[in-house]
Length: 501
Image (cartoon, rainbow, N blue to C red; front, side, top):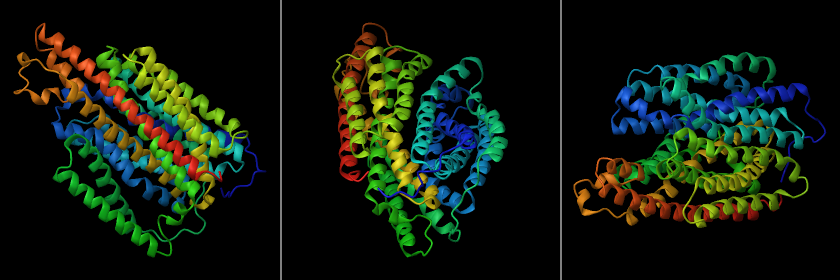
């Protein structure tokens, strides 16, 4: 592993204060990824969106985020990472207010799109600033552990905060929460965070930015759409558009004397291997959260807030493991520690797959075990990604790392979610009295099946609910089993590529 940092310059008080300030936008973006889910029923009643509009309310944020991360990371290298972070934070606050006070579904979709746009300016900027603020290897790992902990902790905190706000305020409060945090963040950022940029930036390349957006958004959309509708014309057209735009983007970067994305970064096996391992780990984690939330609420009968609280111990374990990795890696090299972490994650999925009928305790323990593995791995792999590139390229490297996260999360929901759905449908038994032929669409998911069963009387209702719970249990076992292979795949990739780490 090549290094571009000096191990002698230790961080002082100013650097650690800057890190604390940087945690605010990390928390904002992370919470915003998950806080919306509990507000959807109230949004549906208030704005009455159609089915497609509701899908876009949910998906447009991730699509914009994934499509613009690389472009914004490169832009930060050129114009200044702190400048982009502050501008993005102000825009994020404005978009949050727009979303909070939306009076129509179209207005909320526009607000969510703007949140994704400005969110793409925040995450690469935070990680690349950490790369340039912390020169000492241990300090940098500690800072990255804080970044990863805040990111994963925010994802679990989102449902908790969302559940509390929705019990006391209207649905717009889940967005309006961002505004006071940004009002606090902007002056603190200007006062404490040093500016950094690429000292020799190339010219601004709007064509490359456009091609990266046209490549990423259709590809992510194709994965999401294909998971629920199969390989229809929309999926194939989106996939083709993304592939063609991606090919054109790569060709332009190869021919440019000052490329927006330095493709030579991928020649470093440590860089590429850490990226692949991150994507695979997030893929498995997203799959777990996809079935875990439904299992806790629809099968085990917990409220949304109670379900979120079940996952809190795992989130805390992830944070603790992230900070522990800073010390552990001094005794166990990354080429050994990272694969071991993914094997530990695989054992967490094994607990979910092979414990028989799941309980609240078994879900909590499984998520805690896999969280420890992911916490250890995330700190080390992100440090490897950043330390294997020059500081001037930190923005681009951070953006690529974030893009790998987004793609992994989308693949987890799409691929592992498809395993769950297919297993559920094939093992669901519906009595003829329920009129399956006339209501086939009502039995596509566990949620829709339970909702349809509520309209029926006993004993038909009891039969359907029992069959749905049994079929979903089996689906969880198959999905967790598939996640085991994904986690072991991440272990194998990291073992083969991090040999010099």
